[in-house]
Image (cartoon, rainbow, N blue to C red):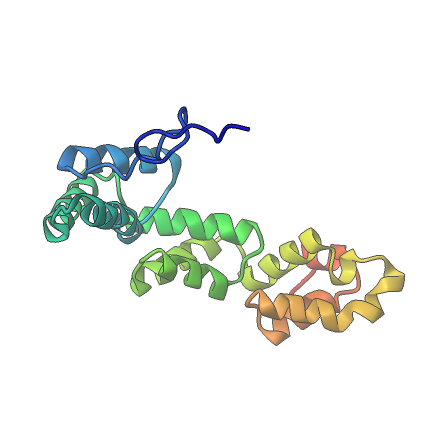
Length: 199
């Protein structure tokens, strides 16, 4: 049986080597940034991280200057911020509101925004804006999470007692205080969480 033929690089004919990363230029970075912004809402610091990964891969593969690439990235972030393509405050408020609706605790939201490079003062303002429509936002968010995961009063009545500690732990891991978790898990029924007064 004949061995498979190989080309001069030792690869099987018809198979191409994976191309390396593109060489970064200011235009390439701008196009990459615009493409990213079309797909994702983000902060300036996070977009900078995304673009700097491209700069670093280019530097390793093509020998380009990472310091020059970093200058291009900084100029691009400044330009996009000036024309409001990037707005950390707007991004933070939108993200905080979205996460609250999905049942995230204030602690989880703050951590998520910090990981995206949003500054503390902007995070505080975003949380305040996301919470202004609810009297007790932590409790309301914990109730949403309980409903979504079928915890506490959202469980069948005969399963509640056996799962109480597990349900409390689930809300604690999600960043809710013990008092909030207790108020939600020990509520008599879902109607008490949706319409009743806070505990």
